[in-house]
Image (tube, rainbow, N blue to C red; front, side, top):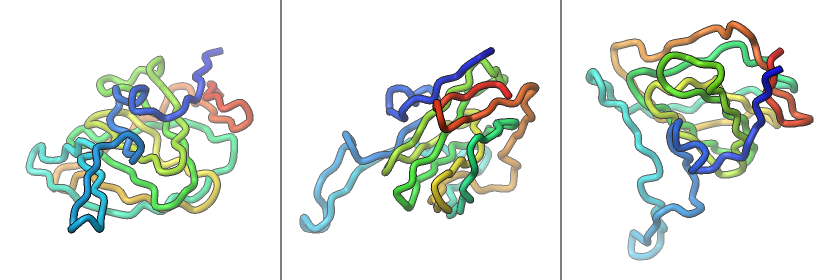
Amino acid sequence: MQILHMEPLTREAFAPFGDVIELDGARHFPINGGTTERFHDLAAIDVSEAGGRPIVSVFRAQPRAWPVEIAMMERHPLGSQAFVPLGDAGYAVVVAPAGEFDPAGLRAFWAGRGQGVNYAKGVWHHPLLAFERVSDFVVIDRGGAQPNCDEIALEQPWRLEQADTLLVPA
């Protein structure tokens, strides 16, 4: 049986898929006469292809019950997609490299308090996976006339389980 271990979300581990958006270790400096600290340039937002423009939305994720079946993935071929949690609940991130979908490239991360993600253009990812409570996320992605979401059904579903934090085929 194939097993994919869930791992902590770190900048280094997530780099092949995009950016981790967090304040720890981020470049920062005072602004506004020293009354505000600016944490600068936290993610590479990439939405301008084919006349796209940045849009800001709020997604409200309903909590899911364990275990969760991972039966589909999606990607946005024309732009990145950033998720910044507005609360302090953790959430799961399931990704695979850009290009032709290959289940061997699946990885699962646990995003802790204060961590957001920016999926790079074309990176496969599962829709939001909140667990503890209803969770709001500021989402920065691409607006424009062209469709920007491809979805696929997995040939073999995977199961995300809480007890041993593993992602295993169903």
